[in-house]
Image (cartoon, rainbow, N blue to C red; front, side):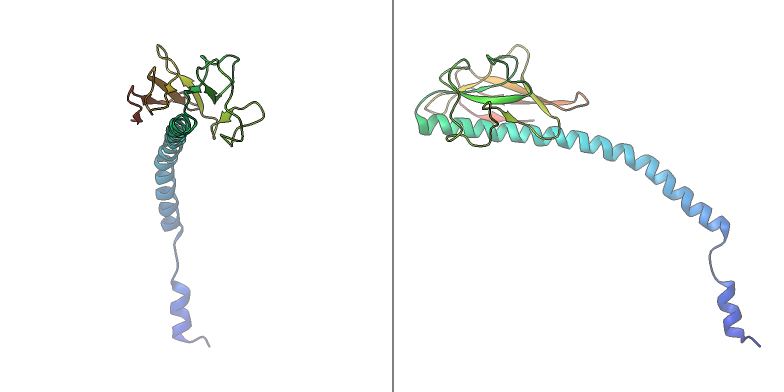
Length: 167
């Protein structure tokens, strides 16, 4: 004989209809959330690249002040020779000598710094690469564009006073 208490436990549980409703709700939430998450990840990669360029600009500015010489943050298409999808620190002008790796560590064998997550940096159309002066200003001022793999971009602006801004 089975006690009454054991019989009541057997009646409890989830019906097939209840399970299907829960699965349907999870599927609908996933269908909405996954594209939003992908868009968020893509834009955050570009924001991180723009922050990295902003940090590099501040580093070049400090390097110009401590070295007492102009430092250019050279990015495609203004670099000679071409650097691919990275940027370089060059002395005096954007056609000048590379800043030695001992002074600016973190570059590859060609003296080029690369951004993470397939993010590319270029000089914005109609602008020139900024050159920081020994006093911390920029002559000329300029803009760099950070572009993600899907084409979304952010612009990093350097004013003549040496102020570096991202949107």
